[in-house]
Amino acid sequence: MGAFTLPQNEKDKEARQKFLDNQPKIYEYVDKTKPNYKAEDMDIGLPLMKDPGPADANQADWALKIFTLFLKIRTNEQAIYDKTGYDFMTPKPVRDIPRFVEVLKSKGNIQDYFIPDPGFIQGDASMGRAKSINDYTDKVFVDRTPDNKGTAPLPDMAKVWDKDETFAYNFLAGPNPNQVKRYTLANKPADFDLTDFDLGSIPGFEGDQIGAAIAAGRVYIVDHSDMKELFANLPGAPAPNAAPRTFNGVRSADWKYVYAPYAAFAVPPGGNHMMPIAIQCGPKADGHQIYTPKDGYSWKMARACVLAAHNNHHEVVSHLGLTHLLMDPIVMATRLHLHPDHPIYQLLSPHFEGTADINHGARTSLILPEKSVDRLVGSKIEMNYPYLLKNRFGHSFRKNFIPTRFEAFGINDTRLLPNYPYREDSLLIWNAIRNWVSEYVAIWYTKEGDIQADFELQRWANEINTKGRVLDFCLPGVSGVRDRDDLIDMLTMTIFTCGPQHAAVNFPQGSEMLFIPANPMAGYAQAPQGLGHSEKDFLAILPPLDVAVHSWAILSTLAGVNNTRLGDYRGAFNLHPKSELARQGFLGKLRAIEEQIKAANKTRRSIYNLEYVHLLPSRIPASINI
Image (cartoon, rainbow, N blue to C red; front, side):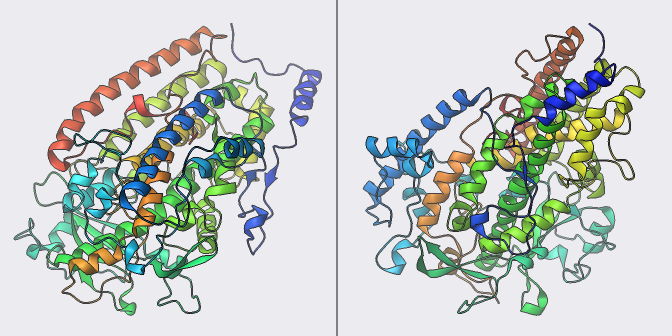
């Protein structure tokens, strides 16, 4: 069979256009861009699909997996009620067939049936606070046997969470692994100037000089100072960064906090991984000082502030905004402007399975006031929407191509920043996807003129760039696709975001984030001031136990369904033998990458006591479907 056949005359073109014009009206944008968001409008100012549309091919498989998962999670939640004796506001989740039938009939949220938010622990205010770190294991991971089996096994992270190596690992291989930048004299924040920092006094850096380390490119930073935009000035709040805890309209006695911190890391001379050296939990003008690993519980509190901010950013921006909601208008444009027999539609369609449905579910449940995101992250839900909007619209599609981003952030040199699992694994997979897409495009577009002649393709790209407001989807000054290389770039980034990138930010929720002291999403006390803090102070900044229980259930759900597989197109290319041959080559490359990552994980375990498994090709779904 030859290359993709473009419409040969106006009649062919009109017929295809008529088909596209008659697509169901459910594929309409929700994009009112009103200045003041109202939750009931379900309009956060982003171009999103109004409804998910027809069921995807793998919906039955997905539904069975989520149903089985809910049963497991409910088992542990029931055990928490029974074994802790806590009096949660929500009754224990139990089997209630008539109620389940009503939920199904009304198309209600079955998550609320199986694993409802427990709400606050009632009684004395101290009842809901951890008395020791062990409370986060003994009162959350309840349904497990002495050999760590059952419905709530303790993740490996719980064994090493308190090490500084693990703190650094979170930024290199955790749920938000692409925020690290090289610290230079040219880009140093004015409010976090380390040029006079005594690096040699930090354990592991004896004799080292900060100036030499910066000049050598061995110092790195994670800067979340822009999260000050999430601070809310509320009547009665103890601080501008505090928000009340509410559930079903009831106020808790305590407050949750979001922070705007800086964290600095460095690689020792001749070292094989970076280590944390300094943390500042907010602006100097607000009284925030620099803490170092020598500062005992004050340092532990500072680490908790950084992690709370980092994970707040992860849930609102890196995960929701820059995978789920970034892909929503691309899914939309594909359905609106590409005929189902179009080769780019056939290539992308498996990478979009479940995305519209899961995004619609998030908008109508997870990100509403007093729902899961609002309950778990530190920032007030009304503050999250404009912050999400700014980051989504300001996110350049092209500047975030994986190799481009690493180079721009100064983190592409493996000698200066060794053992960065996300970087190494993502580059391998990016290159494999790009090679596969290059072969596929060459099969269907045999000459450059075919790109410009394809009116569907040109409208598709323009729609994403303009109405979809995906910044830099098209090259500057180009209203569609310029050439084959340009199309290859667009497709590589789209497929990478749907599969590997979403896997990298989603599935660590079920390992690195399950044990809440390792990765809190909010603080529950103000950031430390001064020195001499105690274990009691540290426990006070960590989430209450009701939050730990609900966090465990929600994150277990979000990371518990792994459906479809990168490279599996289920016979979509049987019409063209060369396409299937190229796909088989792609699968072979993915198998080789799997072995490379497994070999690298032996070294990673020796350094961090953890392995990075989230970009193993055998674990990467083809699409964003959870």
